[in-house]
Length: 585
Ligand SMILES: Cc1cc2nc3c(=O)[nH]c(=O)nc-3n(C[C@H](O)[C@H](O)[C@H](O)COP(=O)(O)OP(=O)(O)OC[C@H]3O[C@@H](n4cnc5c(N)ncnc54)[C@H](O)[C@@H]3O)c2cc1C
Image 1 (cartoon, rainbow, N blue to C red):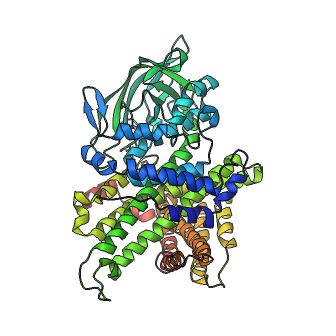
Image 2 (image 1 turned 120 degrees about the horizontal axis):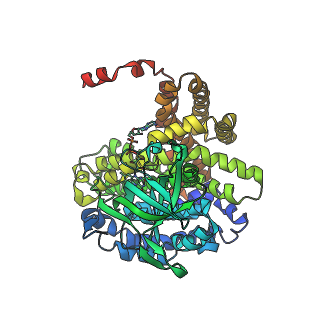
Image 3 (image 1 turned 90 degrees about the horizontal axis):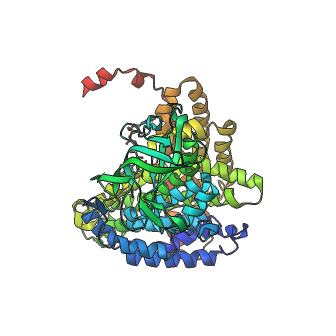
C-alpha cells in the first residue's frame, strides 16, 4: 500500500530558506503568520492528515462511491473524516474571519492542500470544490447572499459545487443550455441538466450549495449570455437553517478511471429555485474571478500526487533487492537507471513545489500588500504562472505516477501496492478546470499578450537578476541563462506568430508551456542550491546540490530543444484533410 509522510523539513526549507515566506507576517492582518505559526500549523495538519485521512486512500479507491436508493453513499470512513477535518478548522484556514474563516495566508492553506492531496486526493475534492464555491460567492454575491452562505461554506459545514459542464458544453461553455426563468418573487426557475459534477450529491454535510451556470431568456446565445446562480440542495429557512428540499437532484454517478472516493454526479434541475449571483449575463466573468484560484488548487493536487509518487518510489528503491548492481549493493537504487528515475522525480517534485508555493505567495501579496506597485507585480506573476502551475504540476503527477510504477516493476502494476492508483487518480487533473491544452492556449494567447508582453518580461528579469554564472553555482546558472535567452526568443516569435499565423502558435503552445515550466524549475533549482550551499545541514546541502546538478545537466537542456521544436511551422500538419488522417488509421 502507498504510504504518506508529510515532507515537513522540505516544506520548511522551501517556505523559509528559499522563498522567505516570513515576510507574509509583515502584511496587514497577517501579523500572526510568523514562520513559527506556519511550522506549528503545518505540523498539526500533517498529523491529522497522516493519521486519519491517508489510511482511507486505498480503501476508498477500492470501495468507491455508490448510487443507492436515490442517494450517493461515499466510501466507509469518509464522512467521519470529513467531519473531523472541517470541525478542526482546516477548511476555513484562509477564509475571511468576517465569515467564520481564520484569515491566515492563502499560502499556508495551499501547503495544507498539498499534504491533503498526497494523502487522499479524492477526499480533498470535497473541501476543494467548497472553497471554489466560497470564492465565487465572495467575489460576486450580494451582501445577503454572503451573509447567508459564506459562513457555512467557509467552515466546510456545507459543501459546494461548480455546475458548468453539460454533454454538449465542455471546454466550449458558450453551448450551455440550462435555463433560468425569472419568477415573481425575484428568484429564478432553473431547468436543465449538468454532467460530471464533483460532490454533486452526498450526505456528509447538512446542505450542498450548487453554483450553476445558466442562460436567462432573451440573453445573447454566445458566452456573453450566461449568468450564475446559487441553487441550494435545501433552501435555507428563516435563520438560515436548511429547510425545504429543492428540485436539484443527482440522477446517477459516473464510474471512472480513478478518484473513486469522489462522487462525480449527473445533476437534474427540474424547476429548482435559484438565486442570481452578480448582474445578468456576467456569468463567465464571475466564473473567471475564482478560476485562477481553482486552477492553482488543481496544480496543488498535482503537486501532492508528485510527492506521493516520489516518496513511495524512493522508499521502495531503497528496500527492494534485485540484481547485482555495479557497486555490489543489492538494492535497486544502485542501478543507474533506477537512480535516474528517482532523481528525475525528486528534481521535478521539489522544483515544482517552489513554483507552486511562490505563485501562492504572490496571491497573498497581490491581495494584501499595502503598495499598489507590489500588488500589480504580484498579480502579474499569478496571472502568468497560473497555467504553468495547473498544467505542469498535473502533467507531472501522471508522468511521475508512471515512473513510480516503473520503479516498482511488475509490483507497481498490481493493486496491492497502491502505486497504479496514483496514475489513475492523476489523469483527471490534466482534464478538469480547463484541460491542459486550454492552459497552454491561455498562456500563449492571453498571458503573453497582456500589457504589451509585460508579464513574461518581468519573469525573465527576475530570473536574470539571480545571476551566479561566475560562482561555484555556475554549473546551473550558465545553462539557466541560455534557457532564459532561448525562451525569450521563442516568446517574441509566439507574440508575432500569434497575430500572423495563429495555427503555428496553437501547435506550439504545449511545448512552450513545458519549456517555460522547465526554465522556472531551473530558476528554482538555482535558488535551492544557493540556500542549501549556505546551510550547515550537510545531508541537505549534498542532496540539493546533487539534484541541482542533475537538473542542470539532464533536464534544463530540454529548453533550447523545445524552443527549436515549437518554432516549426504548423502549415503542413494542419493542411492534412480529416479524411486523409482517418484513412491512415
Ligand atoms: C471526474 C471529473 C470531474 C469533473 N468535475 C467537474 C465539476 O465539478 N464541474 C464541472 O462543471 N465540470 C466538471 N468536469 C468536467 C470537466 O471540466 C470537462 O470534462 C472538461 O472541461 C473538458 O470538457 P470535455 O470533457 O467536454 O472535453 P472537450 O471540451 O470535448 O475537449 C476534448 C479535447 O479537445 C480539446 N479542445 C477542446 N476545445 C479546445 C480549444 N478551444 N482549443 C484547444 N483544444 C481544445 C481539449 O483540450 C481536449 O483535449 C469534471 C470531469 C470529470 C471527468
